[in-house]
Amino acid sequence: MVVLNRIYTRTGDQGLTRLADGAEVSKASDRVGAYGEVDELNAVLGLVRLETASDPALDAILARIQNDLFDLGADLATPLKPDGSPALRIVESQIARLEREIDEMNGALSPLTSFVLPGGSRASAYLHLARTACRRAERAATAFIVALPAPGAHGEALRYLNRLSDLLFVAARFANGKGDGDVLWVPAANR
Image (tube, rainbow, N blue to C red; front, side, top):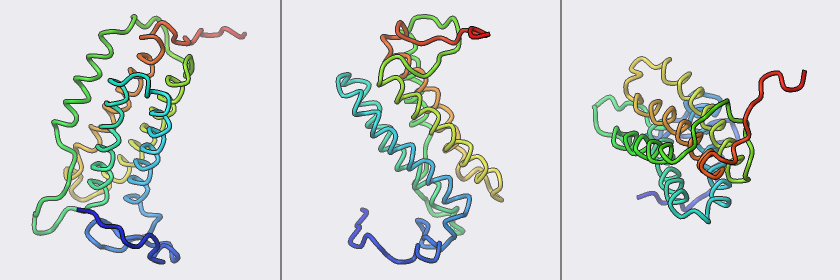
């Protein structure tokens, strides 16, 4: 159980923070940058959910993902333990659930005939914003993880972020009248 009795610790005043295992690191570290991007993505999803409340099924998916993102942040904030003891990590079943949800939503969409521009409905525009925040989190996590001596410790984290960006794209189309309200790219339209 997490207990937060004190909000300020003053550790950050010198540019430092603590990881999940208590180790003190620079706030400029790639690890902190990676889980910071995941935190921002979670905040963007909070905004998205203001626009998806009228679709209880989609909103429930996004609520679960927000919780998963805290798991992901814990995964990235927890170094591999030398004694091999378990840590909270993203697991295959979380990725498999995303894939099932992608397939279910995508099956209801009209076929794509062009690339999709962010827009259409407010919910769709916010979902595209979340997708780009997810891609940025994925890039930050990749940069951090591939530089580790044992990158496999966080392997499912990268797969989760990759699949989540796919889900957010499909959800953006779903929120646009199941694709009927998509704003399509027209190559060289303004020449």
